[in-house]
Length: 599
Image (cartoon, rainbow, N blue to C red):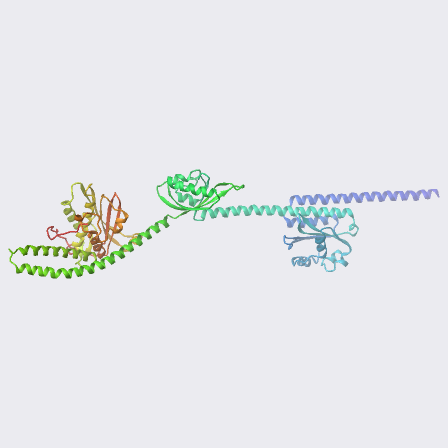
C-alpha cells in the first residue's frame, strides 16, 4: 500500500516536473521566436528604403515568426485617402478587400482604431465583422487592429489574425503594439527621406531653371556690393559691357562711366540704401570705345537680418531705341523742313510770276523810251539805269523760280567730272592762296541726266559757300565725286532717296562750321549769316531746289568750329549711249552774262 502511494506521489511529482519542463521549453521557444521576429524586423527596417516593399515584408515576417494566420497593412496619404495595400496569408477574397479600400471604404476594425487611437481586439470576427470581406478568413481566431500614427500623422492601419490562445495575452498585445510602432516609424522615416530627396531634387531643378532663366532672359542681370563693385553678372550683362565672362567680377561701375554719371549713380545708391527701388538711364563706355545707353533698374539686396548689402540690377540696353528716337526726330525735322520749303517755294513761285508780269512792261517801255531818244539825250543814261535794275530783278526772279522748281530746263546726259574741273578752274581765280583745293574725282561713273548750267550753278555755289567760311583763317576745300549705292538705312533717314546707285558730289571745308539751329535754316530762302554785300541768302535755297528737281537730295553735316560738308546725291545715268551722245560741256565763259549766286 505504501509502495502504491509512493508510486502515485512520484508520478504526480514527475508530471509536475514534466509540465514545468514543457512550460520552460514553450517559454524558451516563444522567446526564441520573439527574438527572431525582432531581429528580422530590425533588419528589414534598417535595410529597406522602399515603403511598399517594407510593408509587404513586415506582413510576411509576422506570419513566419509569430504564428499569425494572416496580416495586412493599408496606407493612407496626408488627406486620408487610400495609398497602398500590402498583405500576407490570404488566399481568397483579398481582391474584394483591396477594391473596397481603393473606394475609400475602411473595415469596421480600422474605423474604430482610427477613432480610439489604441489597439482594437476583436474576438470571433466571423460573427462581429459580417460586413468585412475577410471575416471568413478569421473564423475562430481573434484579430488585432491598430492605427499606425506618428507625430499626429495617420499613415494607415496594421491588422493581424492571431491564434485564439493569444488574443488576450498581455505580452502579445504589448509586443504587437511595439512592432506596430517600429513599422510606423520606419514608414515615417522613409517618407521624410523621400520628401527630403524630393526637396533636394526640386531645389536642384529650381536652381537649374533659375540659372537658365537668368542666362537666357535677354536682359543684363548683375549684383553689386554697397561700393558698386560687381559680384555677379549673367552672360547678357557681360555682352552689354563688352567683356568676356568673369572679367567684370571685382571691378567697379565707375570704370565704365564718366565722373558725373558715377555721381548720379551714387545718388541712386543712397536711395536704395533707404529701401527704395530705383530706375535711371546711364551711358557706359565699353573697353572697345563703343558707347551704350542703358536703362538700369536697381533693387536693394538684404541679408538675413534685413541689412542692405548691395543691389540687384537689371541692365536694359536702349542704345538702338535711343538711336531710333534720334532718327525719328531727324525724320520729323526733315519732313517739317520739306513741308516748309514746299510752302515757301509755292509762295515764292507765285510772287515771282506776278513780279515778272510787273517787270515785263517796265522793261518794254523803258527800251521803247531809249529808242525814241537821241543817244546824247541825258535821259538815256537814266533809262539805262532803270533797264539794268529791271534786268537784275529779272535774274532774281529766275533764281526764285529755280528754287521753287517752276522753271524747266533741257536735260541731257552730263558728265559731272567735267563740270567740277571747270568750276575748280574758275574758283582758283577767286580764292586766296591761304585756301587749298583738294580733289578726289572718280570719272568712271559720273554721268547724270541733268541741265548742265544748273549743275554748274550747284557746284559753284557750294564751293563759294565753302570759300566764304574759310576766307579769314584759310583752310582746305575738298571736292569729291564718286558712285555710291544707297541702302535701306540711308533711305529711311532720307526719304527723298531710293535704294539705287547715285553719283555723290561732296563739297567740304575746314571753316567755321554751323550750329544746329543754323543747319535747320540753311536751305531757307533769304537766310544768311553773312554780311549784306556777301550774298542774298538764296544760294543754298537754289541749290536745294535744283537738286530736288533732278530727283536727288542734298545732305548737310557740320560741327561748329570744325567745318561743314554738303553731299549732293544725283541718280546715276545708266542707259547705254555712245560717247558722242553724252553732252560734252564746253568751257563756260565767265563775263557780264555769266553769273552765280553767292550765299
